[in-house]
Image (tube, helix red, strand yellow):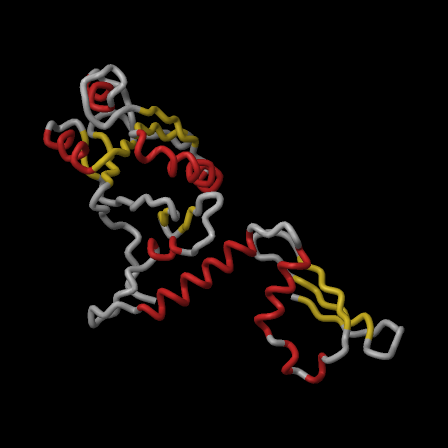
Length: 225
C-alpha cells in the first residue's frame, strides 16, 4: 500500500473551522453546509454520530449570495457554527474576510465514502471499494503509482463491504471459507463441524467436530479461540 494521506486538500471542497465563534461541546457539532455536498453528508452523518458519540446540528444554505439563508449572510450576522462545508472559492472568500479559518485537517468528500481519523465511512448502496483511495495515495517512495496495490485493496474493501452488509449468515461464512481453500487439507475431507461465533468487538469462536463421512456418531474434537 502507498503513503497514507488521511488529511489532504480537495480541489473543489473547503472544510473550514470558524474563528472566535465558540467551540463544539462533547455532544454537539454545529455544521453549516451548502446543497451541493448535503447528499453525501446526509448519508455519512449517522455513521459519524454512531462512531464518535457526537450529535450533528445541521444548517443548510447557499455558498454564495446575500439572501437571509446564504451561509455568508448567516455568518456575518453572528450565527454560530463549528464547521462549515462549502465550495473552495466561497471558503477562500470567507477566509479573506476573517470570518473563517481553513482547518489544518481536511477530508475529501466523495460519493464513494470518506476516510477520517483512520475510519472509512461508506454510504449506503456503495459497493465498489473505491473509497480505499481515501486511505492511501498509492504512491511509493520513488513517486511511482502502485496500480496493482490499488486494485488489490479496492477488491478487498469491496469484499469486506459485501460481507458486512450481508443478511445471510450461511452465505457470509461460505464466502470466507472459500478463501481458505480447505480442500487442500486431506484431514478435513468429509468432516462436519459446528462453528459458534462470539459477540463483541473482537469475538472468539469455537469449532466442534460433529460427524465424519460414513459415520452417524458425533466426534469429540473441539477447538476455540
